[in-house]
Amino acid sequence: MSDKDTISMQLVREALLQTCPAGEPDSSLLARAGIAVEHLHLPEARVSAESYARLWRLLARRCNDEFFAMDPRGLRSGSLAFMCRASMGQPTLGAGLETALAFLSLMLQDMQPSLVRQEGLAEIVINEPRDEPRRAFTYFTFWMIVHGVACWLAGRRIPILSIDLRCAEPPFCDDYRVMFSENLHFERPRTRMIVASACLDLPLKRNEEELQRFLAEAPGNILVKYRDPASLGRRIRTDLLGLAPEHWPDADSLARQLCLSPSTLRRRLAEEGRITKG
Image 1 (cartoon, rainbow, N blue to C red):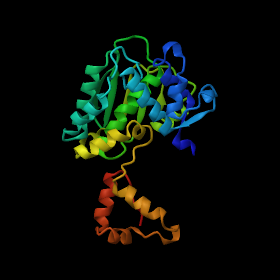
Image 2 (image 1 turned 90 degrees about the horizontal axis):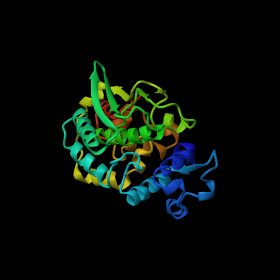
Image 3 (image 1 turned 45 degrees about the vertical axis):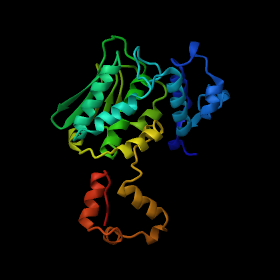
């Protein structure tokens, strides 16, 4: 199992901090998630993304909170499903995000997100009534939910240009840089995620079947960089992996195999955030 398929045990400890009484880990719950309790305090230990996703689901059911009990009101079980269903009916990603953020503002007490457009940039800003910053884990879990839903709505990964956070930098930032962006800035005046504003114009075309598939795989599918399993790029990648590199077709031959014109192939891959050569 490569590191890109795993998550630091530190994030497991962070997830348990407010969901377990007196911070004591529940060994039976960890075992159900496939996490060895004896590894919990090993500094270099890692768990599979699948195990972390199972832990998230188990804690959500036990606490009736999909946000690890990190807000006085929290996100009751079913919040992710409701937010996705409400957002996917909007015409564009911008409108879908505004719907999702309005829902989160209604549900959460201490985190009030809003979407701000400034020239070529779009900012998702977390407005906070409390003077004291939250844990880095709290902010990044919030971003994991918002960015994961945004990528699913658009059917492609939305590149993150930068993330600013009010809190101090934690000692375990490597996973966050892999999940989100190398451009993480701490002890800033406000917490925000910055993306290109052009992303907000992406059309939304999700249906109920796709929603059910997304929810069945959540939260595992928001713990890793978004990959649409039904995308053209994924189909091409799967086909190419079955061939020796010297037998890979050029772009024109690939387009013919897919019954597409070369320009249509390039356009569709560009819409998914991919490029072709030659």
